Length: 362
Image 1 (cartoon, rainbow, N blue to C red):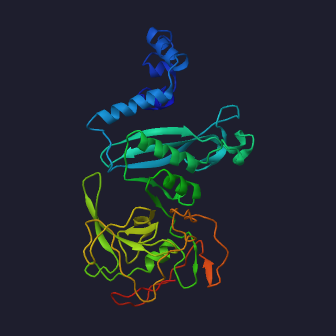
Image 2 (image 1 turned 60 degrees about the vertical axis):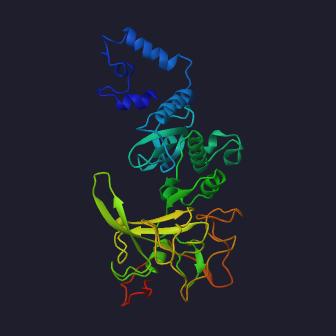
Image 3 (image 1 turned 90 degrees about the vertical axis):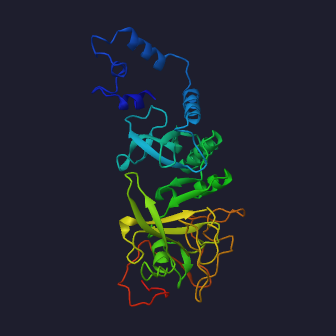
């Protein structure tokens, strides 16, 4: 906590006790104010959990920051380099802030936001496996996804309701993350890497981008499988995006886990303006041909479509039967010609197509 306070302090020497107290480094080092702060940080019997609980209590009580079920809980981690091995939780691991593997400490965090306000909820350090007597098999060891799921559930239990837990693609390959969130009764929306392959029959899409290219699109007046969505940004401007449910392996509108594609241009699927999202949120209810504002359309089955997934072995996210999940190790090749998708897909220029028909891109 003192470190974070120091980072927010306006003085240059932002990591010293004298700076935190706003005192002159030499002349003011022994003043009463500095000594009080030093004593509080190093000697007082305060508990960080109690201080954080009180902070969250105050946030809940204020109308400007009070949480509601329409918000989301974001999960992420940050790492700081640390020399030596004596400090608790230190280990050689991936440090996102540095963009490399190095010796340091990684802390997993949760943040609540509704797009209007945001604030941190909880944080806990990740302890590398070598700190435990039995390594990763030690009962006390917890993976980062397990810690994230526990923190998200802790935030909800503390009164910070949310519609879903949101994460980037770094967590989409973790089985334990999906299972832990499902066990905690939490919905999730997690980004997928567009070229990450899965097992599927040879004639079906093998990657999220393949599934997106299989959706029909002609133009804005004849959008086919796509529905327009108006996005509102913090600076006040809006943009028209397009969204659709795609079929990929066990993903589908009626499956336990859906694959939603959102983009500015369904014709070209620009890399920096297209999102591939896995979610266990149910498909929005709506009558055929009439979709709720901002929802993703559920199209009817067409000739040649793969069957809706019903197998407990489909890559569809953890359901009541606890099947394999996105990111699980692939099963043995099936007898029906199934094969694992490539890690990258080479796209050829699309051939001519008519509205209402699938485009063919390989």
